[in-house]
Length: 407
Image 1 (cartoon, rainbow, N blue to C red):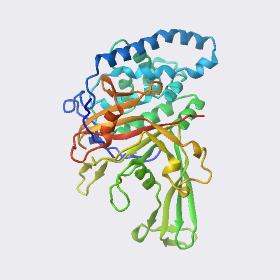
Image 2: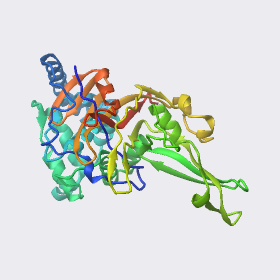
Image 3: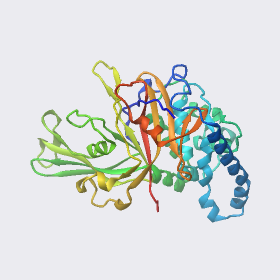
Image 4: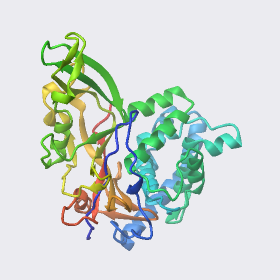
């Protein structure tokens, strides 16, 4: 199966903190059709998906009755069958391929759907129309029960327009991901559920600044939902692998000359060392490859060269001991498997998004390209590494890793 190579997007940032919106990053549907990045699925793959969907629908009624009887064990497992819901595509509503790709990544994550299924239903009709988590839940149920190859997410789209996320706007996937995540978190009225969502996605770090004159150190704890990873090191040299990019992100930086900071103890600006120590990693780890750079002429360029990423990550093998916080929690368990890739094809000013997602139960990879869904191989996913000679191809932009054997 052939797979066009790809290109991503860039500078979007740190969750719960400032981020950059690249308005020119999403995708005119007329220019980048639904066939991009996803070959037509075979009849065999389609039948397999439909059969698993029917099994899921047959079990839904029994599952709901068990929950109503107060079966706490089944309630804890509710959402595990959501894996196969992703076999249903989402029709493009008007430059909505970015939204569709992100929704599929959310819905295929059973840890997320387990939380989503436990939200409190808003009381009034108006409140329901404006509740993003509730509309996402309705869409999930619609996809789960549908016997069609795709559904229209119009109610959720209308809900998002109320919150200034409108149609026919070219969104950056990293920015839209943060916007969706924050809307869901802020609108979940059950604080315990909101805390579970925060724990599921949030990365905790300790920022530090050390004076090179007196060794006085300033520390601050901070968090983010996406880890913005560089494509170049401090010397503007290309990074060759994802592991190199992760190591570079946590590499301390010397601040000298015009970049010197005020030392509270020296009471003057001094050379200093600035960096981050990793404190805690979540169950669902989202990495943002900063594939766009800005030129002085306000021109945005897409970085399309290859950056291979592994199927498995072990942070104990990537980072040095100094890059971990001394009180890092569960450091031995920071081993991850690749779960999803949000890929962008096209240039910085326009393009198209699709998502490659691995089923958590089957272990198979699927390509979600708006209304089209097909099974793909790992070789197809590797086509999103990037290619500096093929600027229009698909390139990974968001990488989603899932922790192995969660407690």
